[in-house]
Image (cartoon, rainbow, N blue to C red; front, side):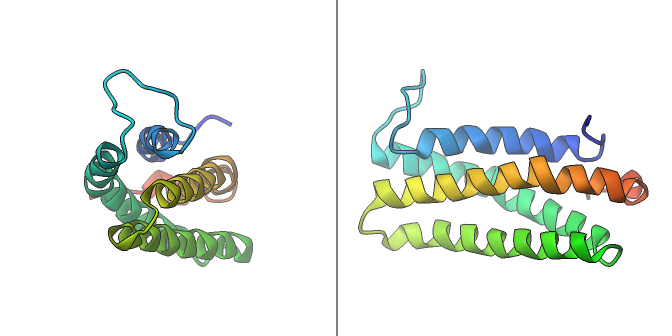
Length: 141
């Protein structure tokens, strides 16, 4: 199914975040211009989380609030995603005290990737199917 126009910006952000996931994994391939040392990865991740991830989660929280209350099945999915947002944010915050930064960044990356795939492949598709009128009225400030 083609992505609803009001979800496209979130999908573009997901694409950027999926690159970060790939880059942070322990088995990451070298990317031109992206150093693979742990401190450089951490610096990059902090930058992306501050500039992309935090505003992205705020937009999704707004989206989820607009989509709530119409279908119990959707509400259940949204609750799961909100829980995952908290877990991922907690994993990110815990990196400051990490004893094994490489492993913890890899774990965060894998969790974030799984979360994004669920949003794109399951939840956004279901939103488009069940709530096209809500998506039509959606505005991000």
